[in-house]
Image (tube, rainbow, N blue to C red; front, side, top):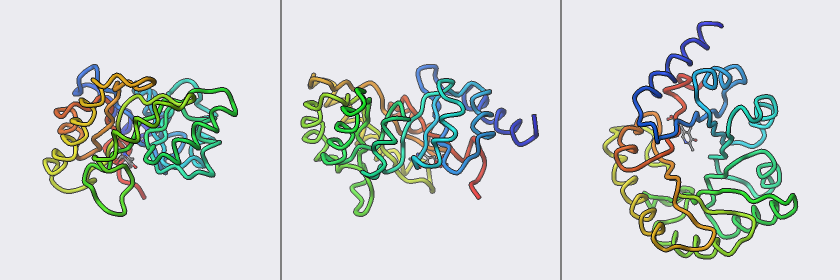
Length: 223
Ligand SMILES: *Cc1c(COP(=O)(O)O)cnc(C)c1O
């Protein structure tokens, strides 16, 4: 084992030791190598997030069912076919059109895909995600699609700055999560609340996250 892998294993174990057992540590692995991903798995991480379909496929094919694979980047329609073949969950559904595309591609291969709806919790223009006031309508429509299942919500929030500044974003998302949970829509369960990154994951856990997506704090700064 080289020292770089040792450092990653050490970082992963430190985080795993300090988070509650019902919170899943997902490694956000964009731009990382197979060796780096292998190191976090060795440390006990079992969920890996990727932003780009193309870079993820060789790593998914090598590691395969030793981990679960989550798509956490914006999904382009022309990548949906590959995404539904290779990923276990798509966390970034943010339009009816994308939901329908995923549904059709899943129908082609006889799969039902667990998805999260991405919330633009800061209501920022030019950001991905559905505005908070539009989430209920989208989820309502998605509940009628036969080849996807809505299992929760995901949000980004600010990457940098004071972690406390993320709290309002997480609160907004949590409130929608709670509201949808009691609606009892077909094919919709509010099981997963994916929020919090390297700088904000403790705040996210306080606000109810049960998936935290960590990149820098596991793997180091990206080149
Ligand atoms: C990169 C990324 C993360 C992790 O961010 P860090 O600040 O490196 O922990 C989490 N979620 C998404 C969607 C990302 O693209």
